[in-house]
Length: 446
Image (cartoon, rainbow, N blue to C red; front, side):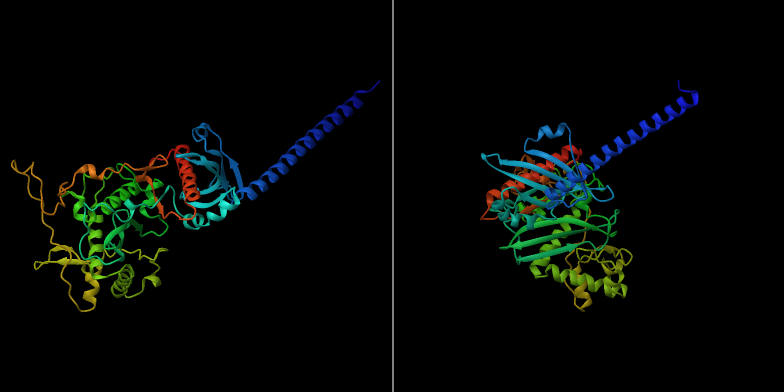
């Protein structure tokens, strides 16, 4: 018969043995799971690393996946600190017009900027043909569309181009920033005497801040109505059609009512577009313009923008001349400011020349009277209060779409390749499907 002391020893040893056994079982389970997870992550890296290099990947689940039958699976990639860096989509895409034409893709999209990080096709032959798409799209933001006639050279002869344009790329920017420290700029391409490409955006004096278009899509910059990037696209698209900033029907308050989705002031866009047009007539290219701004900065500040560290990655001088108004302001004989000089005018003055002012003296809007409230103002130029001579509002209805997305949301345009159009079109559909999924999954407000 066991004594009480022996029973106590026996129970203690049994408990220790049970604890040790539990530790061994849990450790073995964790070791096995960790080994399996490492093996799974190695497989993920081998499978997804070419489109989104990451330290680890986690599959996404949720009801929203059921709304996208073309998506086989979605993974979120993380860096070594566990911070999300992007998404990988595995999908089988088909053309709406041809259900028998389909391809399997893996695509990568950056977490913060929604830019393309990579694309791979399961068909090695097709993958080789998609090298153009990969090289063209890498780093570009989704959604994407092919550049078509109505987004480059318009075939609609209803609107003739302004006269005297020289082909090339032209640029104009404000010399002062707005309340959010953004500096607006417009870049315009002329081909065949017509405006074929327009981009309106703004860089920030704080070089760590994204351009206004990206900031608006990420929610960092907000205005009433549609996102600013969408409104910018709409107004640029309208100018490609109308060819003349005066035809944008800007009201006296800086807005326009003839372009769907544009509620912001377009005053800055109109002014900079007119400056681009005048630069084109003078052959004053973008390179000459940026060189002139560098010179203006140097002669005003007594040092170079590069030495002061105010040139951003895109090559623009992120600086406001607000504290030196004498550089860019036009004064009348009484000493009152009546307008602003363009960069070309300022450079001409530095060269000891004088250009005829390109900035008209601003005039106050006519007062409303009982007889004038219903009249259309400025009927000759058609540049004020919503009146466009010889056109109707319905001519600016931008109702086109791609992959069930309105063209107003499209950020990136590329030229379609002639030798692999179908593969490229399917690739674009894959990225646009990923965009629609992220929009739904992340509750984007676009």
